[in-house]
Image (cartoon, rainbow, N blue to C red):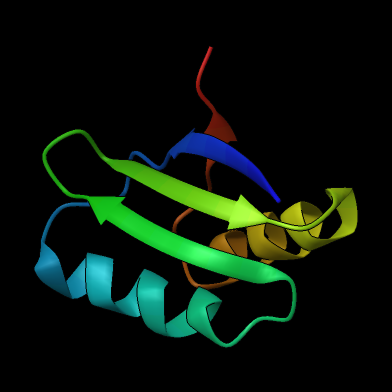
Length: 70
């Protein structure tokens, strides 16, 4: 498993965090989903590049486009 920290600027509240967790938690090959509202960050633990791409696409679809932190 690989871990990554993403920045999603549209995160503004706990509702956002719950929506992200709900969307990603059931995805195959995603093991951990943590959302930090104050820093607008999403931490994922995922199996492979395809899982990460699916997670990024899902975040975009629900209105939380994200990118890897530098």
